[in-house]
Image: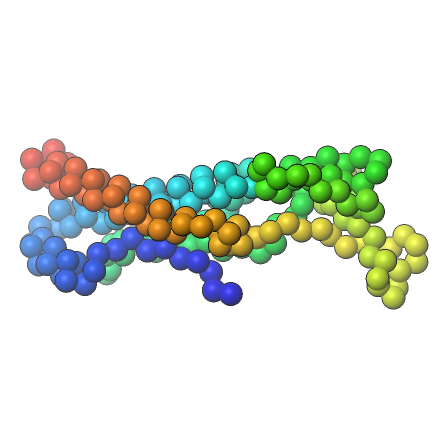
Length: 193
C-alpha cells in the first residue's frame, strides 16, 4: 500500500504566471514559498487533529508519523506532507492491565476490547511497557514462552478509514496558504519585511 501524501500546490499555468510576475523580485518569491510551507504545516496539523479525534493514541505519537516531506523553495513551488507508519504497539493506546488480561480502547467512542491471555511487561523486566500474549500456536510453546507483542492499527490505516479527511486537509491547507501568501506579499510590497 502506498503511503498517503497531500501536496499543497498550484496548477502549472498559475504557478508559471506567478513566477513570471515575480521573476525579478526574489523577496516576494520567498514570501510565496513561506506561504506554501505554512499551508503544508496547517494541513499537517489538521490531519493530526482529525486522526487524533478518531483514536485514543496521544497526538505526540501521531505527529511522529505525519511529516513534512517537501518544502517549497527556489527549485520548486510545492510543499507536501506525508503520512507513514507501521502497526503501533497497544501499550501506546488507552489501556488497563489487570488480573483478567488487558483491556484496551483503540477508537474513541468504541467499546473496550479484552485480551484474556495478554499482559503488560514492565520496564524493569526489559519489556519497556509492551503488551504481549503467549504464542500458544507456536510449535516451540512450552507453557510460558514464546511471547508475541500485540499491535493496534497504523496511522495510514486510520487516515484511510476517516472519510473526506484528505479533501478537507487539502482545502484547508490551500485556503491558509493563500491567506498567508497575500499577507506576506503585501508586507513585502510595503517594505515591512
